[in-house]
Length: 182
View 1: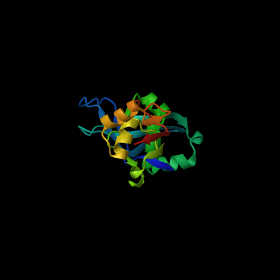
View 2 (view 1 turned 90 degrees about the vertical axis):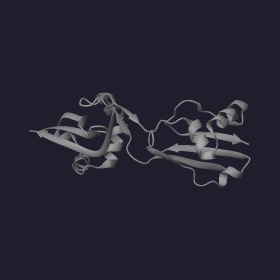
View 3 (view 1 turned 60 degrees about the vertical axis):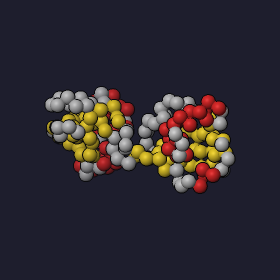
View 4 (view 1 turned 45 degrees about the vertical axis):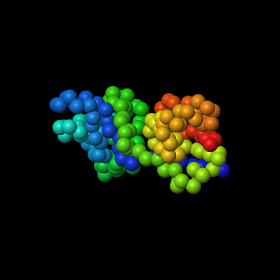
C-alpha cells in the first residue's frame, strides 16, 4: 500500500543577499510590495527586511512595464500585499536570477506523514510530494518521517533495503518515491 508524504512550507523562506548597511546576508520577506507608477509605466518591487538591522531592500519584480500589460487580478494582489503572491515570486527563477538572490529554507517547511501507522509494516512504499520547490535531502526526510537517524538511513541505502529511482543523497525539490524494507 502506497503511503503519501507531503513537504509543505510553513512560512516564507529567508532571502540570501548582502545588506548594504550592516553586511548581513539574510533578509525576511513579509509579503509587502511597492508599486510605483510613472505615467503609464509601472515598477514593482517585493520589499524585504534585513534580519539584523531592519533595513529595507527592494527585489525587482517588474521594471518599466506598461500598465496595460499587467493583469488586473495580479495588480489587485500586489496592491493587497498578498503573501501567497510573494511566495510564488520568491520561487520564480527569473525573479531570483534578476535580483541575484538565493533562498534559505531552513526551518521554513514541515513534513506531513499522515500519522505513524505505516511504520509497523515490513515493506513501506512512500510517495513524497512537494507543495513548493523546497530543496531537501531525501535522507533527511526519510529519517524524520520514519523516526530513524540519518546514519541508519545511510546504512539502509548501503544494504539495499532502501531503494529509489531518485538519488537519495542529493538535494531534491521535486516529487519522488522510495521503498523501505525492514
